Length: 102
Image (tube, helix red, strand yellow):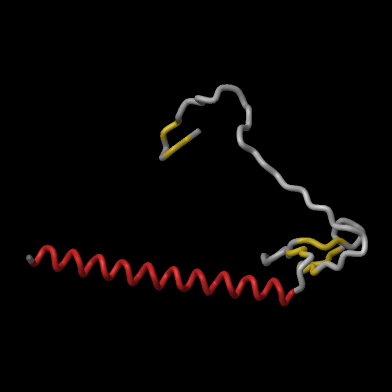
């Protein structure tokens, strides 16, 4: 393992992977899917995959509207957190200025 340009010894010994987790999902036959990607036939038959020139590849059992709503909610929380961080930072700077003036 390398950290800040310094090579650290392997304390775990061997090549074991500790703490690796994975999840598997099953899509039942007949389940409706929302797919956002690119279709091409470069490998022969038509396949759906990630766009060649960048972009998103999404396969979901949720609708496009449900995915959009989830992203909007997430962005609202991120915006509120950023504003809260700025307010707290300004408050701490003001408190430090007051304490240094005394």
